View 1 (cartoon, rainbow, N blue to C red):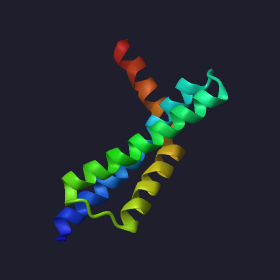
View 2: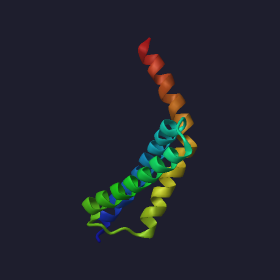
View 3: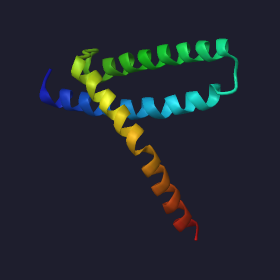
Length: 101
């Protein structure tokens, strides 16, 4: 694998970590009011779908080569999204209020 494909894979894995965080928030908000069985069922389907989506998209990016460090970069993207989500949300909300005026 050449360095261009590897850099694209790093960037894709990082962005997929951000996507994973945002969709997990959405999943949590959608299943909050359901019974425990429905929560487990929807969470299981969500995890399987996200894992399959990552594998399929990695096949498109770098022919399906998934290294451990790609998963670590995805975890870093997830954690950075977790830490900076509230700050980015407040900043975009403040900017939208300025544009409305």
